[in-house]
Image (cartoon, rainbow, N blue to C red):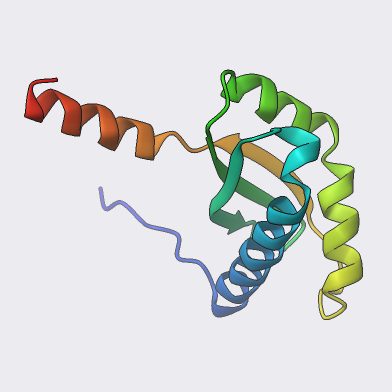
Length: 118
């Protein structure tokens, strides 16, 4: 039985790039609200086919508790969504933002440490 891979449409990819860029700017300007002294990077955005929901993957650095920062971002998800709605008028509907922790860089760092023997 063949396996089908669902490809993102050109529109989805464009919207994903716009959201990633704008949320990157938002978190750069407002990092103190969520992670004082830390850094938040938007690593990837995936938009649903109906453009109503966006999965936003974040890397969070230089904070003692990444999950607490992610929880705070989720609790205040309306703030970056409001920012996105005001900054990007070409979006007919501002998608609902679901935030997830992207810990792939942590895994890479851990593998690198293991290979070096640290």
